[in-house]
Image (cartoon, rainbow, N blue to C red; front, side, top):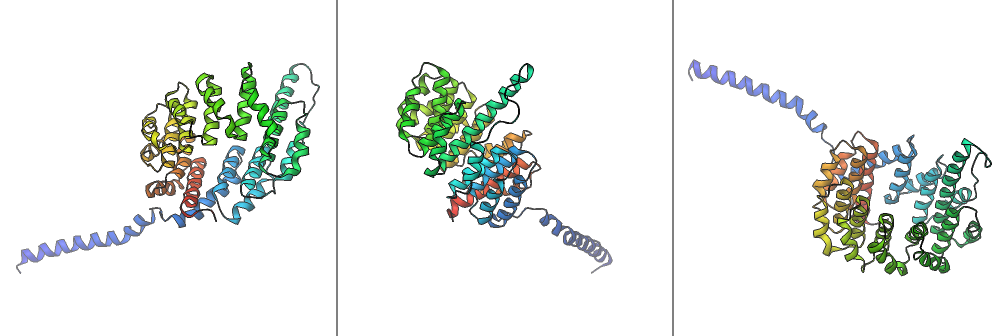
Length: 380
């Protein structure tokens, strides 16, 4: 080999050696930066995210974390729910009791009864400018007690019937209605009949209150009345009607609910998409795919979620696009919707999102991973 050839190979061998050295040094860092997409390894990380949410300063975030625990089939979830029964927020405590009831535990009963029998704080006989504030507090407290009454009905424990009957005599109409719902959930059919009759009342507010009560009860005998509300009701009544029909999973309502995918109201379109997923309306997949282009992001999210329930993953790119937006609430909603898509790509996206900078978004992804795990492996 002549001198020129020797020099050529000497220079290039040094270059190759330098490249290999650089590759040896940097390669570990490249791979270290990639998230581990193993679903089983991701679940402990997802649990850590939910634990962070359970102790967060914002009670709305704590509520979301408690609601997510319904998908976690582990003793640690029940311990966390029992701990949440002592949360400073009454609504967090109510949600903890409701999720425990779904898991077959009555440990939230005492907490619910304490809230149900509580009295509003502060003076009740204020005058002047303070009177309006006191009234607002009383209304908020009545709403709280009504939610506790409905949750008591979910316990399926007949020992709370005397408490709920006492609540039916409360001065606050919200508490009376909530108590009636609780009794209906415990099997008192007379309450359901009263609410069904109230759907025909001339007063729009009475009809709406009755519709909300029947939504909580979920009695299939009200299906025909709610289908009529879809056609004749105003926006609020259309909305509660479509939610109720979705909860009941009414098959006879699929066609009229599908027609609401083009409703003028964003909220009605959103709940119509959700309801079709609950109804397993496979013959409405084309309409749901069209809703993936809806101008409202929440409608697109619910359409993608509904399609996922129908084993169609065509909404995944829509969810991913929304998760890359600057709106934190929309990103969180899209992350939470991933749980309905039984698909490896959706699972990988949820795992990656555990590193998102926003806690609500991370929690949505964490809940989705636990939901996917339940769908794949079943409840333990």
